[in-house]
Length: 95
Image 1 (cartoon, rainbow, N blue to C red):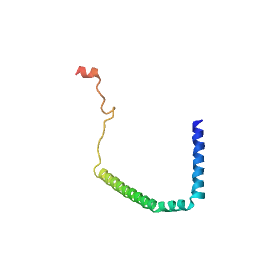
Image 2 (tube, one colour):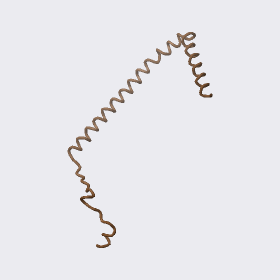
Image 3 (tube, helix red, strand yellow):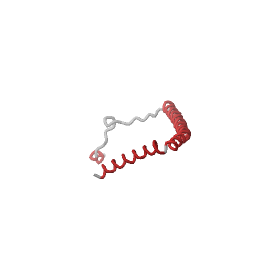
Image 4 (tube, rainbow, N blue to C red):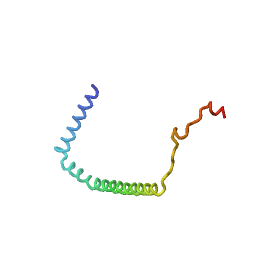
C-alpha cells in the first residue's frame, strides 16, 4: 500500500509543479529554462570532446598493440597430453 501512496503523491507533486510553472510563474520558468541552455551546451560539448580524445587514444593504443603482436609472434606451443604423457606415481618409483 505504501508504494501506491508514494506513486499517488508523486503524481500530485508533478501536477502541482507543472501547474505552478505554467500558470503562476511562467516568466520565471521561461528564464530558468533558457538560462540552462548555454551551460548544458558547454558541458555537453566538453564531455563529447573528452570522449573523442579518449577514443582516439584507445584506437592508437590498440593499433600499436596489434602491430607489436604481428612483429613478434609468440611461439608458445604447449604439449598436449598425447605428446607428453605424464608419469604416474608408480612409474616414478620404478625409476
